[in-house]
Image (cartoon, rainbow, N blue to C red; front, top):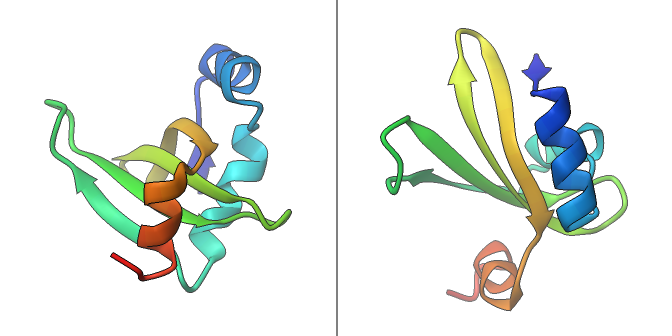
Length: 88
């Protein structure tokens, strides 16, 4: 199950042009790459994967119980695309 803060989702859509409703599709991508985000006190993860529109996205999230809580989503930059494609 997925969840997110509605105001954060709206802010993310404005800033990055990616809706959280579209972003959760990266978790269905069998080629997605997930890394632990060690830059925050809260345990967070970063998944790079393809959404239903063929865009390679970077989704930052945390676990809240059994739910994935999306924190942010944006299009991947070149370095992240290469990570996803296995070139790095």
